[in-house]
Length: 90
Ligand SMILES: C=C(O[C@@H]1C=C(C(=O)O)C=C[C@H]1O)C(=O)O
Image (cartoon, rainbow, N blue to C red; front, side, top):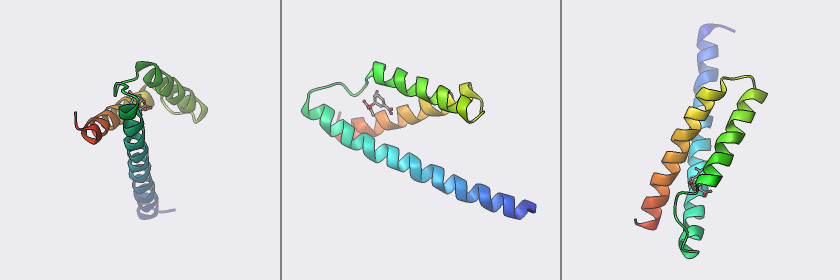
């Protein structure tokens, strides 16, 4: 494979990553509506700890740096909470 082909592969993967982030955010919108109905707070620290734990385990499984993967998940969680707060209007 030459450099252009490899970069095309990266471009496709980058598109997929953004699509997955969007999907994660749409699901968070649904979670926000359920929490609002049940009068629950947006932030659930126990769930966040479980997500981070899982991210670390998956990183190890695929042999990538667990701390960096966890840093990405921290941002994804923050993105979801911003989206959830705007969905709830608070
Ligand atoms: C999506 C949720 O809301 C928040 C966002 C989370 C996430 O992005 O994984 C996890 C916990 C909550 O702080 C949830 O409660 O599941």
